[in-house]
Length: 199
Length: 199
DNA sequence: CGTCTATTTGAATGTACTCAAAAGCGGTGG
DNA sequence: CCACCGCTTTTGAGTACATTCAAATAGACG
Image (cartoon, rainbow over the protein chains, first blue to last red):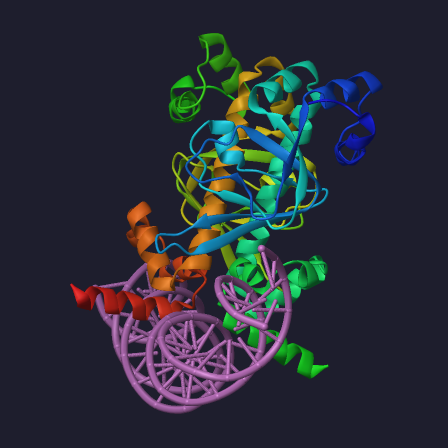
């Protein structure tokens, strides 16, 4: 809410990747942000609640998952520094969220509230473009992931993941990666063994 | 492009599900549409080309697929009357499409061109909301489908699909449904046999 | 240090795939 | 209108990938 403007460096950089803002617009944008800190294991959002915020991750690591009928967690998205995370469906529609989002590490986020979001789009229409790109990127990412499930073996999916996000291997616990890939932890453990042997 | 206004009934209904237009706005919207007819097996879009249009399906049936390295088709989306279909990523970004879209039956579509789309959003900003909902729905649909791959067996996915779109069973060839589910045609055939036996 | 949870390992099982061949079906030309 | 061609679907046999359940080992944290 309050603004040590230095701290918003990362999010301004992120926005600058897609649209160009004037100094005044930057200031206005930052004035709408609030800082949210989470301890490890703390929930950011629980399925069933309405997601009133979208958030940018300044530091830390989170996971967004879906709980199936049998109570299994199915990880839909990870988030690290520099990524956006939220339940966009709920944020835009005002309907209850289907995702649960939880910090895997101590994290610091920047949040924008739904009403402020509308104000922002109204005053700085360039952000329409920005958020459309964000949504469209999320959509493409899911599409790609879906295709990799339609196409390939678990091992291919795992190697793709490592190639794209090498950091995950050390930073994210095996069982979460297994859930993301859609395999059992036991099987991922065996895959890793096989892969290290081969080298 | 030309306007026997009766024929746009279906698309206006579709728009009315999310936003309310005045008569003048409806007229303007329809003036931006062009009618596209496709014969069975005709391409609407080929991967590599830029998708200059988004389209609404007035009649017919299409499929959007991704071609993997081995030349296998992986169906990402079906489209029937009343649905929107396109490669939104390419449409918005201007980058080459990754999807190929093909008519499975003789079809009639209404298209909106990228420039006209921008004009529309500019003149009738309500459409911002409409297309955001569309994109967000597509995103949610992919998310759900991803989760059903992470969670369940091929049979569960097949039953889910039938429950949601009973029409598919008669209307869409087995091999396309198999591709959508991410199984071989042989296996889907066996599944069907098993399921009819059980009754 | 002890407790709790995560990971690894093992054995048995099931789900889905590959390859090959037969049967069905739709369209086309004689 | 029938016969044939090409393509889709079905069936069969053998195999590979991934799961389940159980138990052992290793790590993390108070």
